Image (cartoon, rainbow, N blue to C red; front, side, top):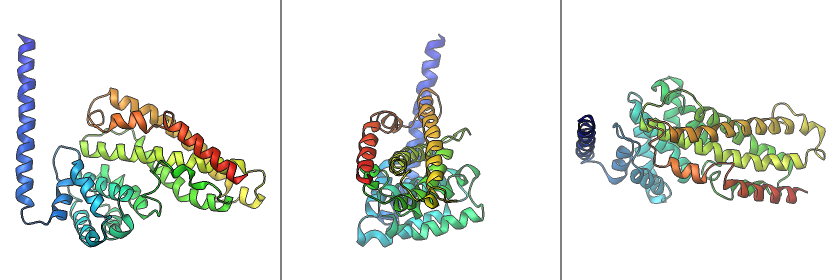
Length: 307
Protein backbone atom coordinates (compact mmCIF):
# COMPACT_ATOMS: atom_id res chain seq x y z
CA UNK A 1 0.00 0.00 0.00
CA UNK A 2 2.69 2.50 1.04
CA UNK A 3 4.82 1.67 -1.99
CA UNK A 4 1.88 2.21 -4.33
CA UNK A 5 0.96 5.50 -2.65
CA UNK A 6 4.53 6.77 -2.77
CA UNK A 7 4.74 5.84 -6.44
CA UNK A 8 1.54 7.73 -7.16
CA UNK A 9 2.81 10.81 -5.32
CA UNK A 10 6.11 10.68 -7.23
CA UNK A 11 4.22 10.44 -10.53
CA UNK A 12 2.07 13.42 -9.60
CA UNK A 13 5.19 15.39 -8.67
CA UNK A 14 6.73 14.62 -12.06
CA UNK A 15 3.55 15.70 -13.82
CA UNK A 16 3.53 18.97 -11.89
CA UNK A 17 7.17 19.63 -12.88
CA UNK A 18 6.39 19.00 -16.56
CA UNK A 19 3.33 21.24 -16.40
CA UNK A 20 5.33 24.01 -14.69
CA UNK A 21 7.97 23.75 -17.41
CA UNK A 22 5.35 24.05 -20.15
CA UNK A 23 3.70 27.04 -18.50
CA UNK A 24 7.08 28.74 -18.07
CA UNK A 25 7.93 28.11 -21.72
CA UNK A 26 4.60 29.56 -22.83
CA UNK A 27 5.13 32.66 -20.71
CA UNK A 28 8.65 33.14 -22.10
CA UNK A 29 7.31 32.93 -25.65
CA UNK A 30 4.77 35.65 -24.89
CA UNK A 31 7.37 37.87 -23.27
CA UNK A 32 9.78 37.56 -26.19
CA UNK A 33 7.24 37.86 -29.03
CA UNK A 34 8.43 41.37 -29.98
CA UNK A 35 12.17 40.75 -29.40
CA UNK A 36 14.83 40.07 -32.02
CA UNK A 37 16.64 36.72 -32.02
CA UNK A 38 19.59 37.88 -29.92
CA UNK A 39 17.49 39.59 -27.25
CA UNK A 40 15.25 36.53 -27.13
CA UNK A 41 18.20 34.20 -26.55
CA UNK A 42 19.61 36.46 -23.80
CA UNK A 43 16.19 36.62 -22.14
CA UNK A 44 15.59 32.86 -22.33
CA UNK A 45 19.09 32.08 -21.08
CA UNK A 46 18.42 34.18 -17.97
CA UNK A 47 14.72 33.67 -17.33
CA UNK A 48 13.47 33.60 -13.74
CA UNK A 49 12.49 29.96 -13.31
CA UNK A 50 13.56 26.92 -11.26
CA UNK A 51 15.88 25.47 -13.91
CA UNK A 52 19.56 25.98 -14.70
CA UNK A 53 20.44 28.21 -17.68
CA UNK A 54 19.31 26.61 -20.92
CA UNK A 55 22.43 25.53 -22.75
CA UNK A 56 21.27 26.14 -26.32
CA UNK A 57 20.59 29.82 -25.62
CA UNK A 58 23.86 30.30 -23.70
CA UNK A 59 25.83 28.70 -26.54
CA UNK A 60 24.05 30.82 -29.14
CA UNK A 61 24.86 34.10 -27.37
CA UNK A 62 28.52 33.12 -26.94
CA UNK A 63 28.72 32.16 -30.63
CA UNK A 64 27.11 35.42 -31.79
CA UNK A 65 29.64 37.37 -29.72
CA UNK A 66 32.29 36.13 -32.16
CA UNK A 67 30.46 37.43 -35.25
CA UNK A 68 31.52 41.05 -35.92
CA UNK A 69 28.25 42.05 -37.59
CA UNK A 70 26.28 40.94 -34.49
CA UNK A 71 28.57 42.13 -31.70
CA UNK A 72 26.87 45.50 -31.21
CA UNK A 73 23.49 43.79 -30.76
CA UNK A 74 24.95 41.22 -28.38
CA UNK A 75 26.63 43.93 -26.30
CA UNK A 76 23.39 45.91 -26.08
CA UNK A 77 21.24 42.91 -25.15
CA UNK A 78 23.66 41.75 -22.45
CA UNK A 79 24.03 45.20 -20.91
CA UNK A 80 20.28 45.67 -20.83
CA UNK A 81 19.84 42.33 -19.06
CA UNK A 82 22.52 43.14 -16.49
CA UNK A 83 20.85 46.48 -15.72
CA UNK A 84 17.51 44.82 -14.93
CA UNK A 85 18.55 41.60 -13.19
CA UNK A 86 19.44 42.84 -9.71
CA UNK A 87 16.11 42.35 -7.95
CA UNK A 88 15.73 38.69 -8.93
CA UNK A 89 18.23 36.17 -7.53
CA UNK A 90 17.70 33.48 -10.19
CA UNK A 91 17.91 35.91 -13.10
CA UNK A 92 21.02 37.46 -11.54
CA UNK A 93 22.75 34.08 -11.19
CA UNK A 94 21.88 33.14 -14.77
CA UNK A 95 23.07 36.50 -16.08
CA UNK A 96 26.40 36.05 -14.31
CA UNK A 97 26.60 32.55 -15.78
CA UNK A 98 25.92 33.93 -19.27
CA UNK A 99 28.57 36.65 -18.92
CA UNK A 100 31.00 33.99 -17.71
CA UNK A 101 30.34 31.81 -20.74
CA UNK A 102 30.79 34.70 -23.17
CA UNK A 103 34.02 35.66 -21.38
CA UNK A 104 35.50 32.15 -21.51
CA UNK A 105 34.29 30.93 -24.92
CA UNK A 106 33.23 34.01 -26.89
CA UNK A 107 34.75 37.36 -27.87
CA UNK A 108 34.57 39.27 -24.58
CA UNK A 109 36.61 42.30 -25.58
CA UNK A 110 34.09 43.13 -28.32
CA UNK A 111 30.84 42.73 -26.37
CA UNK A 112 31.28 42.78 -22.58
CA UNK A 113 32.46 46.33 -21.88
CA UNK A 114 29.00 47.86 -21.22
CA UNK A 115 27.87 44.82 -19.22
CA UNK A 116 30.95 44.84 -17.01
CA UNK A 117 30.58 48.56 -16.33
CA UNK A 118 26.94 48.03 -15.32
CA UNK A 119 27.79 45.01 -13.20
CA UNK A 120 30.58 46.87 -11.41
CA UNK A 121 28.12 49.64 -10.60
CA UNK A 122 25.66 47.11 -9.16
CA UNK A 123 28.46 45.62 -7.03
CA UNK A 124 29.55 49.01 -5.73
CA UNK A 125 25.95 49.86 -4.79
CA UNK A 126 25.48 46.33 -3.39
CA UNK A 127 22.32 46.12 -5.50
CA UNK A 128 22.49 42.37 -6.01
CA UNK A 129 21.09 39.49 -3.92
CA UNK A 130 23.58 38.30 -1.29
CA UNK A 131 24.44 34.90 -2.78
CA UNK A 132 24.96 36.30 -6.26
CA UNK A 133 26.84 39.37 -4.98
CA UNK A 134 29.61 37.04 -3.82
CA UNK A 135 30.24 35.92 -7.43
CA UNK A 136 29.89 39.28 -9.17
CA UNK A 137 33.36 40.76 -8.39
CA UNK A 138 34.97 37.57 -9.69
CA UNK A 139 32.96 37.75 -12.92
CA UNK A 140 33.97 41.41 -13.34
CA UNK A 141 37.65 40.54 -12.87
CA UNK A 142 37.42 37.55 -15.20
CA UNK A 143 35.75 39.56 -17.97
CA UNK A 144 38.44 42.25 -17.72
CA UNK A 145 41.34 39.78 -17.86
CA UNK A 146 43.08 39.75 -21.23
CA UNK A 147 43.37 35.94 -21.22
CA UNK A 148 39.83 35.12 -20.06
CA UNK A 149 38.97 33.25 -23.27
CA UNK A 150 42.31 31.43 -23.50
CA UNK A 151 43.10 29.85 -20.12
CA UNK A 152 40.70 26.92 -20.56
CA UNK A 153 42.33 25.76 -23.79
CA UNK A 154 44.13 22.39 -23.52
CA UNK A 155 47.40 23.94 -24.69
CA UNK A 156 47.21 26.90 -22.29
CA UNK A 157 49.66 25.44 -19.70
CA UNK A 158 52.36 25.45 -22.40
CA UNK A 159 52.09 29.22 -22.88
CA UNK A 160 55.05 29.88 -20.57
CA UNK A 161 57.44 28.04 -22.86
CA UNK A 162 60.52 30.13 -23.63
CA UNK A 163 59.36 33.16 -21.63
CA UNK A 164 61.86 35.02 -19.42
CA UNK A 165 61.15 34.93 -15.70
CA UNK A 166 59.92 38.55 -15.41
CA UNK A 167 57.37 37.89 -18.16
CA UNK A 168 56.22 34.69 -16.43
CA UNK A 169 55.75 36.61 -13.18
CA UNK A 170 53.81 39.35 -14.97
CA UNK A 171 51.50 36.76 -16.54
CA UNK A 172 51.03 34.86 -13.30
CA UNK A 173 49.90 37.85 -11.22
CA UNK A 174 46.37 38.28 -12.63
CA UNK A 175 46.03 34.52 -13.07
CA UNK A 176 46.86 33.79 -9.43
CA UNK A 177 44.60 36.57 -8.17
CA UNK A 178 41.64 35.15 -10.10
CA UNK A 179 42.53 31.57 -9.13
CA UNK A 180 42.44 32.64 -5.47
CA UNK A 181 38.92 34.01 -5.91
CA UNK A 182 37.69 31.05 -7.95
CA UNK A 183 38.94 28.50 -5.42
CA UNK A 184 37.40 30.42 -2.53
CA UNK A 185 34.01 30.65 -4.27
CA UNK A 186 34.01 27.02 -5.36
CA UNK A 187 34.92 25.84 -1.85
CA UNK A 188 32.28 28.02 -0.18
CA UNK A 189 30.43 25.86 2.35
CA UNK A 190 27.17 27.81 2.17
CA UNK A 191 24.15 25.93 0.88
CA UNK A 192 23.30 26.16 -2.81
CA UNK A 193 19.53 26.50 -3.10
CA UNK A 194 18.86 26.95 -6.83
CA UNK A 195 20.03 25.21 -10.02
CA UNK A 196 21.14 28.60 -11.38
CA UNK A 197 23.62 29.19 -8.54
CA UNK A 198 24.69 25.53 -8.74
CA UNK A 199 25.54 25.94 -12.44
CA UNK A 200 27.46 29.13 -11.67
CA UNK A 201 29.44 27.47 -8.88
CA UNK A 202 30.37 24.53 -11.10
CA UNK A 203 31.51 26.91 -13.85
CA UNK A 204 33.72 28.72 -11.33
CA UNK A 205 35.08 25.38 -10.09
CA UNK A 206 36.06 24.52 -13.67
CA UNK A 207 37.80 27.91 -13.88
CA UNK A 208 39.67 27.15 -10.66
CA UNK A 209 40.98 23.86 -12.02
CA UNK A 210 41.96 25.31 -15.40
CA UNK A 211 43.69 28.27 -13.75
CA UNK A 212 45.50 25.93 -11.38
CA UNK A 213 46.80 23.85 -14.30
CA UNK A 214 48.15 26.98 -16.02
CA UNK A 215 49.56 28.30 -12.75
CA UNK A 216 51.33 25.01 -12.04
CA UNK A 217 53.08 25.13 -15.40
CA UNK A 218 54.17 28.72 -14.82
CA UNK A 219 55.37 27.94 -11.32
CA UNK A 220 57.46 25.08 -12.70
CA UNK A 221 59.30 27.57 -14.92
CA UNK A 222 59.88 29.84 -11.91
CA UNK A 223 61.13 26.96 -9.79
CA UNK A 224 63.49 25.82 -12.51
CA UNK A 225 65.00 29.31 -12.79
CA UNK A 226 64.97 30.15 -9.09
CA UNK A 227 68.70 29.86 -8.37
CA UNK A 228 69.70 31.77 -11.51
CA UNK A 229 67.22 34.61 -10.96
CA UNK A 230 68.35 38.03 -9.71
CA UNK A 231 67.94 38.32 -5.94
CA UNK A 232 65.80 41.45 -6.34
CA UNK A 233 63.31 39.48 -8.48
CA UNK A 234 63.31 36.55 -6.06
CA UNK A 235 62.55 38.65 -3.00
CA UNK A 236 60.42 41.38 -4.62
CA UNK A 237 57.38 42.31 -2.53
CA UNK A 238 54.72 42.34 -3.66
CA UNK A 239 54.87 40.21 -6.77
CA UNK A 240 58.22 38.47 -6.49
CA UNK A 241 59.23 34.96 -7.46
CA UNK A 242 59.01 33.48 -3.97
CA UNK A 243 55.56 34.99 -3.43
CA UNK A 244 54.34 33.43 -6.66
CA UNK A 245 55.69 30.02 -5.66
CA UNK A 246 54.08 30.25 -2.22
CA UNK A 247 50.74 31.16 -3.81
CA UNK A 248 51.02 28.22 -6.20
CA UNK A 249 51.61 25.79 -3.32
CA UNK A 250 48.66 27.23 -1.40
CA UNK A 251 46.42 26.88 -4.44
CA UNK A 252 47.53 23.27 -4.87
CA UNK A 253 46.14 22.47 -1.42
CA UNK A 254 42.87 24.25 -2.22
CA UNK A 255 42.58 22.56 -5.63
CA UNK A 256 42.98 19.16 -3.98
CA UNK A 257 40.27 20.05 -1.46
CA UNK A 258 38.00 21.14 -4.31
CA UNK A 259 38.59 17.93 -6.25
CA UNK A 260 37.58 15.92 -3.17
CA UNK A 261 34.55 18.18 -2.63
CA UNK A 262 33.27 17.63 -6.17
CA UNK A 263 32.96 13.93 -5.48
CA UNK A 264 30.70 14.72 -2.54
CA UNK A 265 28.54 16.92 -4.80
CA UNK A 266 27.73 13.92 -6.95
CA UNK A 267 27.08 11.76 -3.91
CA UNK A 268 24.92 14.34 -2.17
CA UNK A 269 21.53 15.85 -2.87
CA UNK A 270 20.13 19.15 -4.07
CA UNK A 271 20.95 21.36 -7.08
CA UNK A 272 24.69 20.58 -7.15
CA UNK A 273 24.10 16.83 -7.41
CA UNK A 274 21.59 17.27 -10.25
CA UNK A 275 23.84 19.20 -12.63
CA UNK A 276 24.19 17.13 -15.84
CA UNK A 277 27.60 18.69 -16.59
CA UNK A 278 29.06 17.53 -13.27
CA UNK A 279 29.80 14.03 -14.55
CA UNK A 280 31.98 15.31 -17.41
CA UNK A 281 33.91 17.53 -15.00
CA UNK A 282 34.50 14.59 -12.68
CA UNK A 283 35.70 12.46 -15.61
CA UNK A 284 37.80 14.98 -17.55
CA UNK A 285 38.36 18.23 -15.66
CA UNK A 286 40.10 17.22 -12.45
CA UNK A 287 43.77 18.17 -11.93
CA UNK A 288 44.73 14.79 -10.47
CA UNK A 289 43.31 12.63 -13.26
CA UNK A 290 43.68 12.53 -17.02
CA UNK A 291 44.71 16.18 -16.97
CA UNK A 292 47.85 15.28 -15.06
CA UNK A 293 49.63 14.01 -18.17
CA UNK A 294 48.84 17.26 -19.99
CA UNK A 295 50.27 19.36 -17.17
CA UNK A 296 53.39 17.20 -16.91
CA UNK A 297 53.97 17.56 -20.64
CA UNK A 298 53.48 21.34 -20.55
CA UNK A 299 55.69 21.91 -17.52
CA UNK A 300 58.46 19.69 -18.87
CA UNK A 301 58.45 21.53 -22.17
CA UNK A 302 58.43 24.92 -20.43
CA UNK A 303 61.27 24.01 -18.07
CA UNK A 304 63.37 22.65 -20.93
CA UNK A 305 62.87 25.85 -22.92
CA UNK A 306 63.80 28.00 -19.94
CA UNK A 307 66.96 26.02 -19.38
